[in-house]
Length: 433
Ligand code: ATP
Ligand code: MG
Image 1: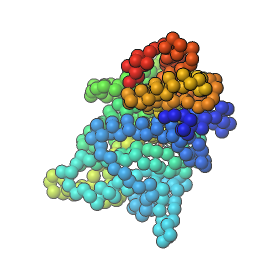
Image 2: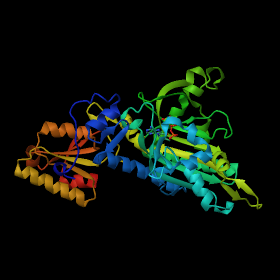
Image 3: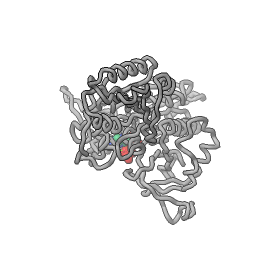
Image 4: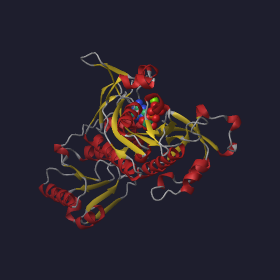
């Protein structure tokens, strides 16, 4: 992409409305613009990153056997009246009336809709287990929308729902998602701690929140510091049962549920830290199938209410969480997996014909090699170009000016380490292609 023909409206100063670094950097690097409180326009690079995250989430869901569908954002109130949540949900729900005076709502989550879909399509235990997901916008009229897209009112979520004949099956579905979540966050290079979200209740330990440690997080956790010996961000490969069992044996609990007097962790091992909730998995049994009449015929011919669980990932929140975990004083430092482009070319001397020709040529070669490249071909000063490229945060930069070209050298900069090395075109193509 040529920056001169693109759309990245960067901002020089720190916007006064932003109170955490990810919000500041998303605004400054031109990824988002606010439309109204907690509602954002996603600009090109913001959208690319969000889509890349969504794709990793999708791949891991598919790998775990979940099946993608797409449910609408607008739901009939009737479904929520059946489950009993229509009144209970309160002011966080955006309620809408259509032209025929029918009560509708903008979905904050989809348990009701999916239970209704299941009820109308699945009749027998033979069609189970079933796990359906979608990646769809949600609306929650949060009391305090803040921190940009981290706590938005409109936000993108991956949510899925498992259906099983019995508790054993439901537990298996839950465990599959537990592993899928570990893999998803590991692929994003994030250390997400699985935190017990429900101490007792029906599901035993079948409710976990996945929390990323960050000083700007809104939750406070207590956890056994031995969990840090697990390189959670490095769990991409095989996550076997032993690893899962070990992880689940560690204590990690939200502050509200932490009981200091009855905590099993030795005081010297107990750590308190702030976290960002990026995912939540949850077994809830027959709560919705009972109230909404989602029954299946079991092997003995009798009808039973189907066992369910739900699993959410904050896809748009992850964009912010990733920036909280990957930035320095000059801007964002994208991990390669989700970077909007892999490499940026900086043409230091736009008016120099040789220099521009060399940049143009390298740009086409990189494109031919399938490299995602952002080419700063603007008629702007070197200082502006350096600052913007650091701010946008692509993993690699190629800096091209007349001095280097005289020696046939192209400068390659690693955004994360700051290391600069000189290369021929051939070497650059080998390294990045
Ligand atoms: P929170 O405690 O942060 O309000 P929640 O418990 O309401 O989260 P869930 O209903 O479990 O969230 O939703 C699943 C995921 O969606 C969360 O783990 C989070 O990553 C994301 N999420 C929830 N609310 C928001 C929001 N207002 N803005 C952006 N992402 C959100
Ligand atoms: Mg909430």
